[in-house]
Length: 318
Ligand SMILES: [Zn+2]
Image (cartoon, rainbow, N blue to C red):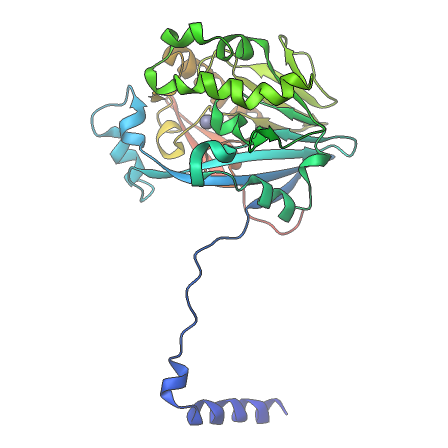
């Protein structure tokens, strides 16, 4: 039987006219909505891709040696502008559905805004989200809080450090950052307004746990109130490190390269070096907002102040 089918297939191929074989299917422009799921102990973690955008690493780098950015990108067959990610993460504890950052939403034009489709593809709806934890208030992390000016997460409480709201909700702080960041003050008002009006914004000012297994870790530098979130169950740990890294091929090998988006460059570098060493030493999972999707992996300490990123091995098994 099998042999007969093979013979039939061969003979059909011989009789189909060449013109019909050449009839082409139009190429399709899209990608699948991006989600990637894994477990950290009892927690289900889902990475969601809000979008990607060309990131001019060479123009935005601060403190790099001449030619260094191009050289390090070339080591990974990349060049500036390098495609940057807008990753957000969802944690289901079984009791609570949590978002850690929300992507850019509409605030990055067509380059963001994929979060909702990715979330739905992952089997969730924004109305199910109980809590949103923000690493900081830049619009590529908090822009996804709103859609057309309304709350995308109408049942969620928004958590962010007090140092962060104190800074970005007060335009008098503009002189402390580069002009590049001035629009972020107005964006913060816009993103938080409906949640403030609904009494759903809650700030914290310590590293006390915010939920079972989830605690903030203050990490000032990129912004004044930047916070990591450490998720832990038993010996399993995952660190959500926000904007510790903007350009993985550059800042892992050389953590001293900062970005023009940083509020305080020396503090950003110190925070980065400290957490690279700690994450590598402890073998923590790391989830990064701007590392190639799903942005989950480990840090390896190469010695001499240099580090490497080891991406998670893709798996269909949770
Ligand atoms: Zn960012």
